[in-house]
Amino acid sequence: MKISSSIRVLVVDDDSGMAKFLASHLTRRNFDVSIAATGEEAIRLFRVYDPALVLLDIAMSGLSGLETLERLKQIKPEVAVILLSALNDPEIIFKASRLGADDYMAKPLEPKELDARINRLLDKQRVVHEVSQLREHVRKQTDFSMLFGTSPKMEEVKMTIEQVADTNATVLIRGESGSGKEVVARMVYANSSRRDKPFIKVNCAAIPSELLESELFGYEPGAFTGASRQKLGKFEQANYGSIFLDEISEMHPALQAKLLHVLQDGEFARLGGKRDISVDVRVLSATNKPLERAVEEGMFREDLFYRLNVVTIHIPPL
Image (cartoon, rainbow, N blue to C red; front, side, top):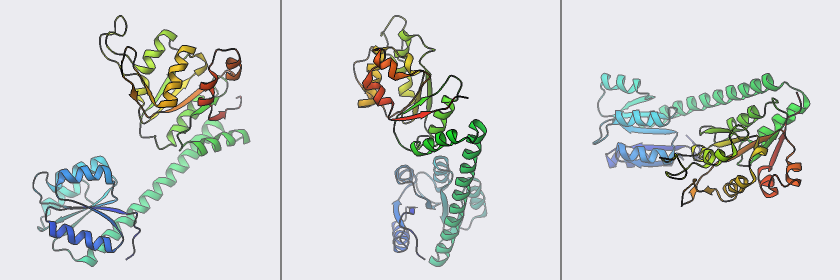
């Protein structure tokens, strides 16, 4: 049986002899194996190691095998888990099945049978993943066509979204009011690796300029009259995700400098704060005005314009 070395397996067993046997057996079959001796250690390793398969002993001190199974399935429901036990207890098998166990094997293990069970589970996992990808592809194609149609210009927009979505490049979306700029921003986000993290929208034209700074960057207690407690700004709320700055042309030049600092250095200070806060946020912005003219008139910073305009998506008129 030849398995790709990219497939990671986590072996969880407080019997060091059994754990080493399983690790040796699986390593010879080109699996990438890690070992945990307790449920608590398994959960820590699981978060970092992100295995495709877990071999999990039922009877362990501390966190039990069933409790560990429940926690692992909460973190990653699609992970394949084979429970191992010296007891062939129907009640335990039933409980394990309800908690999401994919298979159950009684010790002592027969290596050929273990290989066959693992093959079946991984084949099933691959099929489920491929079907999920196909459905997602069809959904995206359908959603885009329903929203924008299939004209050559909109096909160009779609192609640009697909090319830039899974990068960290800033994107400036340009088009008339009502042309679908926010929809395009959400599509960029939905097709990116940040799609499971927050998407925060801020309309720069809808918030008074004197309040926009605290809205974007938050404030500390005492920063101004009425600031009795700390408030997290939109950039902190969007950490590891994306922020969509609509009507970016309406941002006051003084605030543009602070936004530029975030784009350059990935950090900012809350209003009234004394320390910088680091964030990892992708910035998507939109405008219905020609920013080049605003730059020429001194109303928009040229350096910020080039930072925001790494990729431009032009939405044609409706």
